[in-house]
Length: 384
Image 1: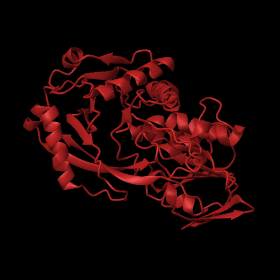
Image 2 (image 1 turned 90 degrees about the horizontal axis):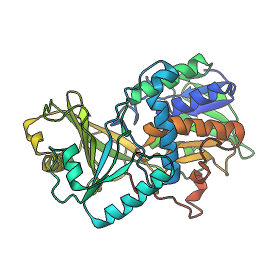
Image 3 (image 1 turned 180 degrees about the horizontal axis):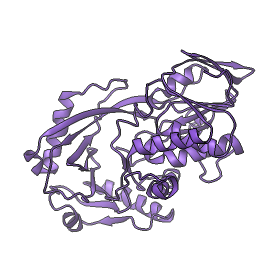
Image 4 (image 1 turned 90 degrees about the vertical axis):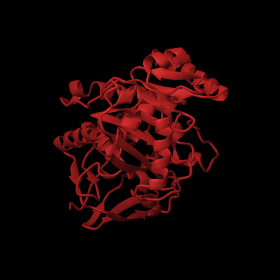
């Protein structure tokens, strides 16, 4: 373990790898990324449904999507490796007049920020695009054909590989156990393998970001929330280009994932915690709802169950930027389920904040930690 670094990044998921790459690409000095597991992307990044979309309800999230999905779409061109981007299209099923009112406003906002191909669909058009889906109670839908899925692991490992090639160091099996400050500024990172003197640390610890903040007496309102999904055996009636369907009222979603489907749903009664254990009672509730919306699932079997952790904030927006109370302590966490898809844009934004004093490509100034204390939350409606 080296004794000094210009910038230390805590967390080796998609966000930490992206920040490391973007800093290294700017020749930002001696950069070290610390990951407590044996390999990168073993936390939330590796337990991810892989969704990528433009359909958000706030300007900053739409702009993060515009930038990030363009990078993911052109990943092969930029990095020489495919991110396995598949533009299935996200199809939100809406079942109340209030949902339709909100989503029509969202569509207008998305179009204003350049998402020209997003559209509202009447039930007849939804039935044409998803003929096997039970549309009972569905009043309309929102669809963007460039939304879809991509591979979180490939994106993370490629960012990390390129960061290494540009001079960044990546240390795995390295657990941060403390952070020392001096005169209100970060001074030293303490790990199970020794200490690193530094004047800048980037907290990319995802669901564990609040624990890292506590080392410098910061209250970071990020909690880990379990999210479950499962894979099925082959469902030949569903084509491989079938839309990524989301029933907005219940958060049920499903999309093709060879050879069958990936199916998930958020548990509205989930309480904060770090467990990856499967809640079998909720799994049965999820199965019941999935069978209602897609009856042909009765012919398939569950082949895998998986749980991951959302890193949830009170307003479902990330925390990006330097903490006012501790100079040199930067947060890049709290993406509330859309971190992977925003990792290219967020990594760029954080690198610009550190090196230029502000993010110039995408204005993320409203995503500061202090917004919660000062009563400036920015509510994202399109999070399930």
